[in-house]
Image: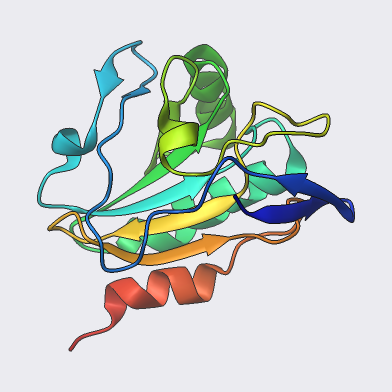
Length: 168
């Protein structure tokens, strides 16, 4: 369990983000066509998971727009905006905002929030996901995570994307 804050008040999550260096847990999320997708659909690609409570909030919308802009130019990389919003609402948001380089996926009928340790357990946001970033390489290894300590704050885009451009 991790503790973050919402407007300065503590909120607990169900667990912890996947460990850096470990294999990313498989998942089942729903796309805008109401199809279930998992890790295998993105095989061989680097994955940036922008996990947010709801695309219908200012900070979540901003982070999705910024990842759409910043990650659009990265080779062999998909950006996944993951929230509890219904796929219909996600599709509408992406259409209105001109989001073309991010795949919106819904947790509404999956155990993703539990499996990735981001399910909020208490407060008025209980049941939604915490704000987090998980970056997974093309071999499905977790290479970066960030659980944003204040849910109303934006994630660290620079560090998250830097792991994708770093050459050993």
